[in-house]
Length: 206
Image (cartoon, one colour):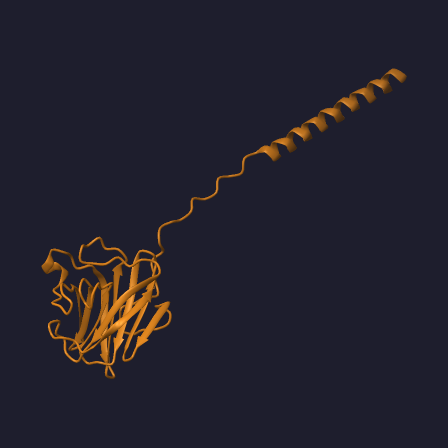
């Protein structure tokens, strides 16, 4: 009887020891098991979904804006494209020029107007201090306006457009993060060739 009890105690002790060793092993595995790999960061820009080039500027479409007298310019960027709205108290054209060197020279320009309810837009480049500024396509470049639209209403002309921040075209200026110098203009006609009296300098902060 005594032997049997001793054997039982010994067997119980062995079972408890094996159990404790197993638990220690499981805990060690739990501590040393490698964490699952973190998901790869997403670097691709997320396209804007709130922007519509309908000639109506609303706060949801743009994060930046400036007013220069009767000329207004609004912008936003998704790190791949820039979205711009231009509005002026005019019955003709509105235009913006990016990074001129002297007066209008070397400015990458976007010129737009609305005629009989239909918007037109031109990707142009100023080759002189006060023009001429022919379309990029006439200089060997490309038209890089991706989307556009406009409206003429209540004495105002509004043009909206979308373009890559850096098109790679020799006749387009890359828009970089931070302050970018611009020139602006508007008028009562739709001609690219006339000298524009309503013009000035400004900046956009992309």
